[in-house]
Length: 271
Image (cartoon, rainbow, N blue to C red):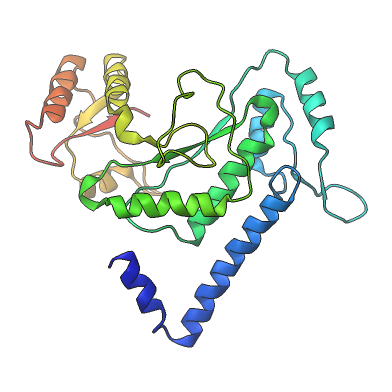
């Protein structure tokens, strides 16, 4: 269905379904409004992701809800105090701390995506002392299911969810270029696409093969499940795990050249 068809069909939804849809939209609106009204743009409590970043970098997040106070009230942490503390605790960390929102453009965004957008942008802004930034990256790895309509819709929705929040300052000469209309948004720099990095991904795969850390497998998906084992039964190695590096390289290059039927081989990491 086109987007217009979906919008027209919503008018004929049963009333209960329509109310659920409206409630979902209202929740996103409320979340976006909360984010845009706070001083630093978010209203999240500390979580395992912010704690991992803080422990790894020594930089304390700013603008998160203080849920440890004895008064029982929720207060936003003081941005200036946190930035001073973080810069003193980790003078060697330069950054940037980068998050991303990487949807696959094969459909419209739903409520779960809205939460992911808000969270990833919020975490980046929470670590402004570490040059926090959020990338908008389209995971365009399956062209048979992707459509330009979905690309435009996704970017439009992300702009809407983040409305009222300032874009990230671009201080990198690589990204400090004149942006097209499509590239302009609350994210850092231009819209990125996975397909732009295919050569880098391929080179990384070659590197893993040459180090003996990846191999070309030819088990089917069903056979892989059988070899994986269960909670009570140990798994077993693929019979192709110990191919030579030379054979793996030859097969992998053939995969890139399209020499084999789709799905016959797959590159797997040795874990």
